[in-house]
Every structure is written in structure tokens, then in C-alpha cells.
Image 1: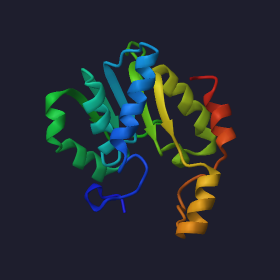
Image 2: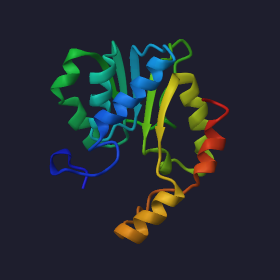
Image 3: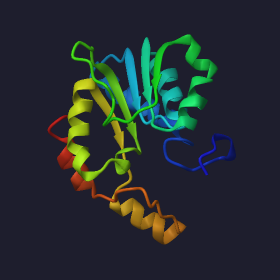
Length: 174
């Protein structure tokens, strides 16, 4: 279902290049430079790879709790051309240094539905200290209702929340 080569229609995979391009366009309009990128939940690394191609940052950070994702990204040849750090962890457990300079752009694609209600706000606080700008995408309750009805897809691990919830919780920090 998530394989890049099978023509997957998962948002952020089949159209990763477009996501990177429109994000760059928006940041270019504001004359905002992106020299560093952090991906919080990189998964297969497809979206991260496209953001790196488009932005050409000097350094990247990639975190994901999955051993498989960590192992697969660690073997990617395109990473050898850029200063990078890959960690197997979550946003909630990511060690934050007081002296660390924030990354210019953080990527949070389809991960916040897996963060517990009690940790959502503190995760946004942490991200606001780690990143100047954020690319944020998450399926909402409307999306999950559609996926259940039209695709017979249910994600038992996801927290189904409204768009309004995310906007209200994100707003103080970004």
C-alpha cells in the first residue's frame, strides 16, 4: 500500500515532489531561506528526499520510531551527499539541546494522529523550539470517516481529531 513503485496514492508519497515544490514556493514568497530540514516521522523517506532535492539544505535531521524505517533510510545513497543525522525516536522522546540552533523547516506529515491527546500540545511546543517553519499535514476526522466509508480503511492506532482541534492547538506555536 505504501510502496513507491506500485503507484501508491498515499498523500505525500505519489505526490511528494509537488508537496516540496509548493512548500518552497510559499517560503520563497516570504523570502525565507531553508538551509536545514528536520523530518519528524520520515517513514519511507520519500517526502524527505523530495524536500532535500527542492530545497538543497546543508543539513538534515530525520527521526522515526520504526526500526524498519530507520534501517531503510540509513542505507539510502542520496543521504551520503548531505550532512545528516538519523535517530530512532519520537517527537515526544526526542532529546532537545538548549544550545541547538532551530532547523529552518520541520516536516510533520501524517504523524500527529499517532500522538496521544495528552502529548499533542507539548509536541507542538517542542517543535516550535526545534523549527522556524513547519510543513504540517495530518488526516482529520473527516478524512478518517471518508476512508472508512469509501475505502473500508480503519487505522486502529490513529486518533481521529477535527481540523479545528489541530488548528487551535497549533496556532500558538506556528
